[in-house]
Length: 277
Image (cartoon, rainbow, N blue to C red; front, side):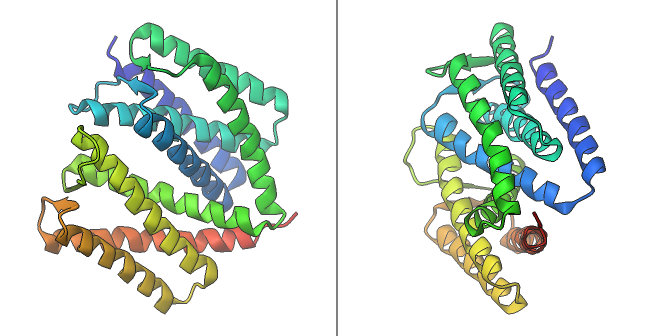
């Protein structure tokens, strides 16, 4: 059986479940919570997978082994796990379901190891169970705090929402071969790229989120996008970002994508402010 098949099954199950949840709620806030949870997983994976090399995925869908492993993480964690988190939030499932889903993902991880499509370095199955249970509890707690009007959790929701979208754009552009980042911190150039791009994504998220959390005035949003673009230009001038396509194509594409993210961020602010207990 090809390595990709179990990963694609996870994608199919996640899409079906997420479609059902969206059809039940028909609310933009569901998307906000889902992408915020995905952003939270992204930060966790950056620390555990990228910085500390805890495990490796082998979906064998991308020629570059490091990107292939990141794609496996995208499928199993950025996709499947947040879907369960938003399901728990939407249907207000009790703690017993946290345990059930944590056992499910621990079982999936064990199966992936047995199939040879996933490998632990220093990670353990017990860690998966504990962190999954904690994540599912945090998912419900997080949503409850936003409903209760917590400024901190509403800001963090917007920030992680933005980070998730920026990361998606960055990953797709990386796969397309349009650009990469290089600073020389790691021997593996792809790992180096991922680390530097994460810092840029986080900075972009903070600039856009802080601006839109404070105001939705168009002139300030344009100013925030201009600052992000200026930082991008400085990184290009210093050689930290390398662009392999025409600059006349790259920068309009960059501005359109981040302009769309800013617009979605404005909608997320309104959705969060419209929550009632």
